[in-house]
Image (tube, rainbow over all chains, first blue to last red; front, side, top):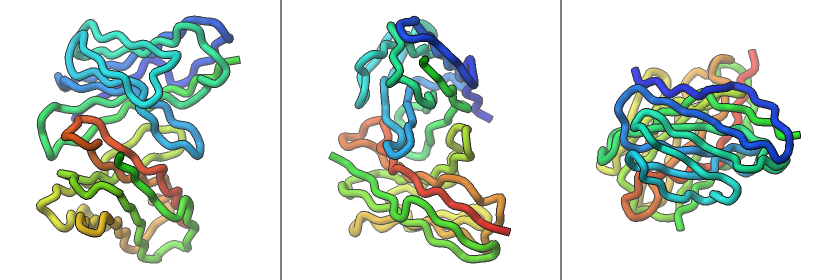
Amino acid sequence: DVKVTQSSRYLVKRTGEKVFLECVQDMDHENMFWYRQDPGLGLRLIYFSYDVKMKEKGDIPEGYSVSREKKERFSLILESASTNQTSMYLCASRQTGSFVETQYFGPGTRLLVL
Amino acid sequence: KQEVTQIPAALSVPEGENLVLNCSFTDSAIYNLQWFRQDPGKGLTSLLLIQSSQREQTSGRLNASLDKSSGRSTLYIAASQPGDSATYLCAVPAPGGSEKLVFGKGMKLTVNP
């Protein structure tokens, strides 16, 4: 079974702190994704990576950056956390080029910025 | 731009009812559609993926259908149980053959014992 893990289930940070959210997948997938999920707004894509060191902005990249130095690991970075970044963050991975492959999600990280 | 809509946003039913969850999308040029389940505070779990060449997929008490021409999909849950309580989301690939998905906002289902 595909496994996607996220470094923390819950995080509490202060405004202005630099925050790292880590995601690791064990199925050698090329594609990895970071979403945030907010009530009433649904899932919104922050960043997408289609290979090591390759990235593409999603719908809401402002205030975030990402790093993919190894194929299995995709990090989301909040350079200077703000209260409006309080949210549920979900990581996912997927094999590339297949019409029958789904995205596999991690358990999520609930971030509270005070 | 692809938009995915799920109505209603929430549904509460007694145990044992057969349910139909609806999903509509604006761009019919899709190569598949997926249904996911999300339990409170957790990640998403894939339930069913229907390819554009298929009309339906079944897994246990779940059956999903796809009508590309009308831009609609339904998820049928037979003999609902309290354990089916969760949020159900549908998703289609973003336009242009992208690896990215466009999600509906989900429907929160509560099945009461």
